[in-house]
Image (tube, rainbow, N blue to C red; front, top):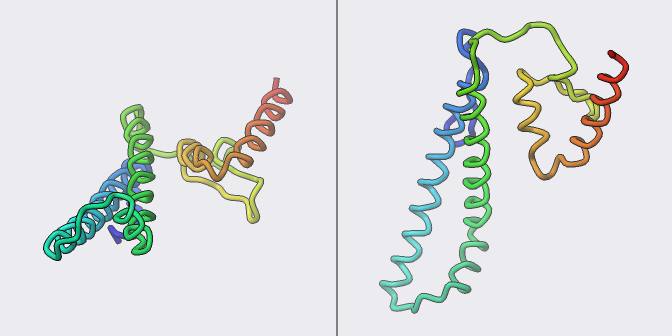
Length: 148
């Protein structure tokens, strides 16, 4: 479960605190995997007398999928920072049960309801979700204008 970054929900704890713990475990597992693989490859090449060539080594990493793994580790580190801020700002361990527009993303099929406002903001902060963020922000602005 650590390697996949999944966890079983505990209703006594907030989603953010559980997600943060899970993200840290996933980050540690993937980072260890990356560091061990790259270290073993470097040692193997050195023992064979192959001179260190950064470009060739990077290409080898890419072919072995280690560049993608490194990118995943960096992405997890980014998310961990976001969740750490949210957990630090949290004042309650209870979550609202009612559905609200701050946690709902209507522009995907099917619509997604996130556990918290923060979970939605993390999803929208991902670079591949820029267009969804623009749509969501415009929709929220229109909704807020109608409420006033």
